[in-house]
Length: 248
Ligand SMILES: NC(=O)c1ccno1
Image 1: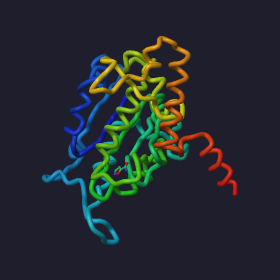
Image 2 (image 1 turned 30 degrees about the horizontal axis):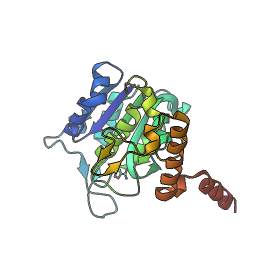
Image 3 (image 1 turned 135 degrees about the vertical axis):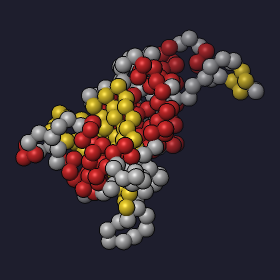
């Protein structure tokens, strides 16, 4: 997979040189490039923002640097009349106004060949950038959750971590990806390791029993209990009820 990140804070992504993602970059599993938006400015101050039309607080990111930066990482525009390329790169702009990122989207993105992440700052990027590229390739605004960050960089780090670990070969043991929270729609069960007793707290005896059937059943029960307690909205019956209510 190829990943391009456009940002005014390239150093933010130095952490992608370490751990599993760093190894995936070294082995060529992931070709990840970070681009400084200011390299696509042409004035002495390397200006990337200006005051908003219509007034209001804050600054808006100018379209010209974004146009130059995105043109540099996207395939040359084909016939505009043909509409957005369905097999081209997917351009993602993190935004609180975007669709919610979740494990299903992480799996979807892990199947892409080329992702381009545009990190907005200030009050955001001039809307014409989104509109222009949506006519040329697939563009998606994606939100980590219902809160506001100072920019897209933290959201991109989280998405790249969630997506990168699903790419075959990145995580040593693919089995470890199976019984995780949200993989089967439930939260994961609690985990324990040696010692069997720690500060008068014991490992659940079933886990020491060697009875694999009983262990599997206990773990599933734990998933259900934890999901009911922490995230009842994830339970199938909650979704079935919602489906019914949305039909009116
Ligand atoms: N909630 C978000 O994903 C976000 C991205 C940028 N600011 O907030």
